[in-house]
Amino acid sequence: MTNLATRPPKPVVETSSFGGGGILGGQTATIIASAGTQPADDSKMAATMCAVSCDRACSLCPVHNLLCGGLGRDGGAEMQAVPVASSLHTIPARRLILHPKEWSEYVPIVCSGWAMSSIALPDGRRQIISFLLPGDIVSIGSLIAPLSGHAVEAITEVTYRKFKRDELKEFLFARADLLERLFKLLNEAKTRADQLALDLGRRRADERIARLILRLSEKVARRSTVRTQTFDFPLRQRHIADATGLTPVHVSKVLGELQRAGMVEIGGRTLTILNTAELQRVADWR
Amino acid sequence: MTNLATRPPKPVVETSSFGGGGILGGQTATIIASAGTQPADDSKMAATMCAVSCDRACSLCPVHNLLCGGLGRDGGAEMQAVPVASSLHTIPARRLILHPKEWSEYVPIVCSGWAMSSIALPDGRRQIISFLLPGDIVSIGSLIAPLSGHAVEAITEVTYRKFKRDELKEFLFARADLLERLFKLLNEAKTRADQLALDLGRRRADERIARLILRLSEKVARRSTVRTQTFDFPLRQRHIADATGLTPVHVSKVLGELQRAGMVEIGGRTLTILNTAELQRVADWR
DNA sequence: CGGGCAATTGAAATACATCAAGGCGTGTGG
DNA sequence: CCACACGCCTTGATGTATTTCAATTGCCCG
Image (cartoon, rainbow over all chains, first blue to last red; front, top):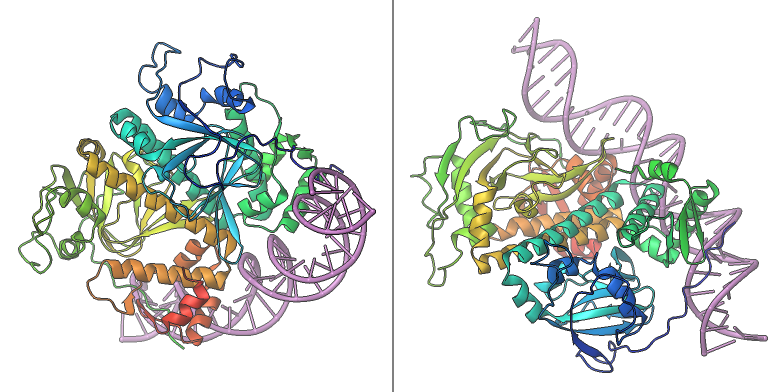
């Protein structure tokens, strides 16, 4: 039987600016965002690891497409620096990136690590709306409405970049094509939310869990150049439960079945899809 | 025991242009949309009843705010005609307004009646994402992405106005303030979808049903000048089931309890909230 | 070494689904 | 105009998926 009980790697916290006050303070480096000249120039950057994976992710990052590679991108790697100030932050696992009640004037974008966006009820029940991976904007709508009651929490250690809402907004609203892309992004988020509602309302536990695994698998694959059946999987079963509307106990049982049936294997902090076809069948995929 | 078994009024179909081909054909009146000069000038209009309720709804219609009352609205009733051609359609209950596979070049807006927007699985299971009342845009995102797999179906007889996507889009993208309002609308839709996910994933049947009733009550109230505890309620229990992720049978049982407990009464095609406080308590409201 | 979180497992409880039968209102066709 | 079929709602009996409760283990961390 595989072991699900290993914890994520110990986060090596370097700087954390949240919790010490919402306003841009503490040891954070304020820089001008510029698109990396494609992967592979790891060193040179002042920041640590996070910057590296941020760079890697940049080429797939929606913000990269939206901001960095926005206009003059026909020829190839020609990119523009974005005239929007941003600051880089690092936060340990399990800490809040965005408080549900906080009226932040910043729009955070994940650079490395996993985070989640959820809505909670006063009595503790909660629903995870989406998992955030490098390149994901924390609530696209937060550009307009400062907050929608979502709590955004780090799952692993997370580095993220905070853009000032007003500046970013001004920049975006000045360019019609970027604006349309932004609109499209928001619309995709809405579509995913609708699909989530369908899953939660009309699918059984095994379907929901299998679908979550497949969705995450695709999401991870989209950000890496190589397509592999094994990928980083830092979620606790509690996260799966909150994402699928189930109980941790039940998640454990269903996940156990999936593993015993030889479809997936979860070990340490990775997940391997062993039998894609079967898993897709269970998931009623597409 | 109250009677739930009465049917909605027999629809008097006048013109229906869907089903006879997606392209603007049949007996439809193409006109230029202009805002009514506030309620109470019922006659004069060439069209039938539908136009009347459309006029009434106009002052609350998001499109009205978005398009008609868009720019010069400070003084009061001063409004502009919208330079976007549209055509008025009437469709009987239970018919599709938008096919999930259809790549329509029109954006429909409900003028009178109730409709619903849902996603369906091949095996018949389906989830209603939202109910559409007069003034509602059928999928705001449809301005950008032609379709998101939603089926839009008339619940009662419905009249709606079809705007040509390209023209409407061009008009909207030319005005930054309208665009922002549109953005806000889409964001609100996303927020509602998230809330729906929370409800479906984390609330029990009675909560879900009570919440649906309260939400609909507010939605109806928002479009009428007088606030009353009794309102038009053309939904079959099957709709409630598909909106709450339950079975019609179970909806019947829970609804029966709510009625026996004296919280609501459903008779004919109306719903009355008898005990708001209790209903809100069951619904875990706000 | 002790405490706490995560996962597993089994037994019992419960919320909801499924199945089946009956009533009622409405539309339809003879 | 009646008979009948059909859709909708109700109700009870039964089945099942999922939750709740509880006990146990392993692991990480202080």
